Amino acid sequence: KIMPVLAPANLHLGCSAGSCQRYSKLWKVFAPLNLILLLFLLGAIIASLMLTRPHEIWVPPLDDQLIADYSSHLNSNDIILIIGAGAAGLFAGYTLEYFGMTNYRILEASSDFGGRVQEMTNFLDVPIDLGAEWIHGDPKVLMDLLLFHNDTVDIETISYQPQTITVFRNGRRTSRNWFRFFYREFKFRNTTWYSYLKEYVVPYVQTKLILNSPVMAIDYSGTHSNTSQIHVTTEDGRIFFADKVIMTVPLVVMNNTQLFPELPATKRQAMENVYIPSGLKVWIEFDEDFYSDMQLTGSLFGYNNDAPFFFDSVFRKPSSRHCLTYFDVSPNTHKLTGLDDDEILSKLIQKLDNIFDGKATHHYLNHHVQNWEKQPHIGGAYSFGWDNYDWTLRELQRPINKKLYFAGEHTEPVEVATVHGAAISGRQAAQEVLKDLQ
Image (cartoon, rainbow, N blue to C red; front, side):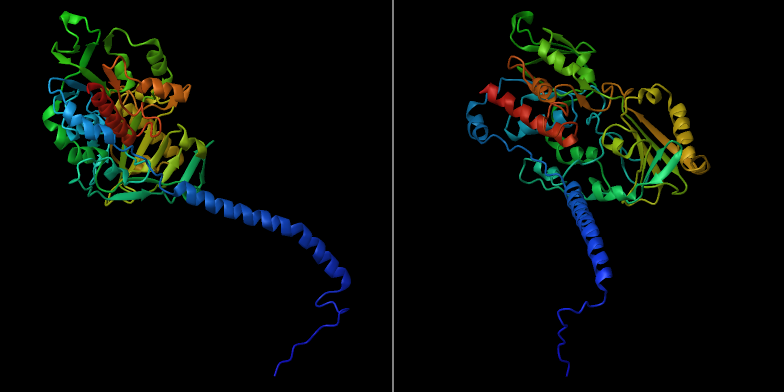
């Protein structure tokens, strides 16, 4: 039987009086340091959880009063023209369809819908997003954007959280794998943004699409040919008449469109406040995987700004191929976008050889260049920097004389510069038009 033993009050257990004093002093020094370290670790864990938690995307609900009142005020003689069949233009038409307004047309300059949302299906064994690629937030936004109750989204997405991350600066490649604990996006697993639009939105507006119709001029003066209607003229001389026009084209294109009268000074100033980078994506296929999941070519923290970088094109996708994507919207992009495709490839292979000891040249198989600066009727990537942010976004979105309305990734104040932001702006613009038609 074990009996408790009580030490005499004057007995020092395990140390002499002098050593216990030293231990006490050390404890007083290291205890606060341990506490600080513990708090730092807890803070890092909390930050990691917060930064990798899916961003909740709020899709504004439809105006209930508009839903209740619109059908009784519908004027079938009103004509609406939507300029541009990107995400914003398609969702504007889709929303009009939902409300029963069918007297509209969508004029698209190119031979296909999508705008900066395009795909390539014949390069790898999985489809590739040529333009917009990431889902910047919770993927459930894909369902939240849809209006018709019989629509359900059957699209698989993946959590994009690269495990191997390296930075190449001053001739040295260093690992930054810890960054994976603080970064997370979402992507499509075996499809694209283009396919999403094609499957869930385009079927509702297909008969209203007029392709190969670049708009040259818009006369909304109300004095043309003794009619108050807006006159929209295409480059081949066709004229379309409308009571309302929704402009969803990129800012570069809008700057090159003739408008009569000229846009208000505040609108023009807002357009000048937005920086649109050139935009370059290049896919380089290799016969071997010798690279990290993400390779930054500048500061690690520059990734969230405008530093160009490489990333594994098929990370977590059902592919057996080896491919890197180069993405560049930096201020220096023009140094590459001004070159031809072979020269661009040569520059990037040289850059990769410097990083990976010549392996890029040795293992190269194929490539594809998507130069958005040279893409007709596009002219750049997406809105990136804004002077006087709040004022600029409000002015870009503000309608003119209840005739011209504006939508696009550059007009959505919360989800700016995203595909879902463009879609939201299209929904909102369509509702503004319908309110003004009542």
